[in-house]
Image (cartoon, rainbow, N blue to C red):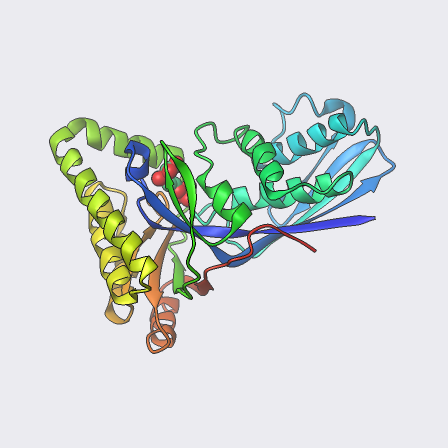
Length: 317
Ligand code: PMV
């Protein structure tokens, strides 16, 4: 018996970094997915195969993953271990992970893979609801990223557009806008934790300025929420550019990102970093008349692709 589940990647439309200091953020899931397929094995091992590498751990060693060279695989073994314990299962498992989301560039590939693996492994025993999947995997994700806010996980599980802040958690934005983006990869991998620490240092050196920037970001978020509700794409694009200017000012842009932004701004409705920056990806909002030209210009200098908002989230199939 095989069990398959998939989950989408995500982009941050507004609010990255400032969200760490209590400002709201707007995220959405995108139509690029990670698919996990699980099946029982008679051998007492958990075997994981993915495009980033393979690993095998005997079922007796699932408690001791500290020596595992592929750190990013720890949550998957953790998910398997929990499912074995909860269901008193004593044999093995084979998990295959396929991805069409670039890895390590802020597009939510680790959350999406955790969701897909949690749903697919558990479905072999009992199909979980979205809420149950999310609860289990916030725990699993924290085995690699201790400060996970859970925002990536929520948007990838439920799909669509989401408003998030530290105090109130996440809320679905109940509109079905057909926004299209070009996502361009700087091919500079980033480490979210170190870019977040870098911003903390910027804040500590520039407290008054940073306070003003948070106020500005807060205004951008209020206007963006309204513009999204009204599907005012011109306004959304203009606000993305304002948001990017703040991200540049706090020091999370790079020369390559600035080149991508400048190129995208020539033809798109607006462009900005998505995620932590320090590398990673930019997003450019496009409409039907600007899509082909923006894609063509960006593809001369980067790996890029078109992404639309995904409204499905976790999918069992
Ligand atoms: O690059 P990503 O997708 O990991 O996004 C990080 C977003 C930050 O606001 C920089 C950090 C956070 O935990 O919200």
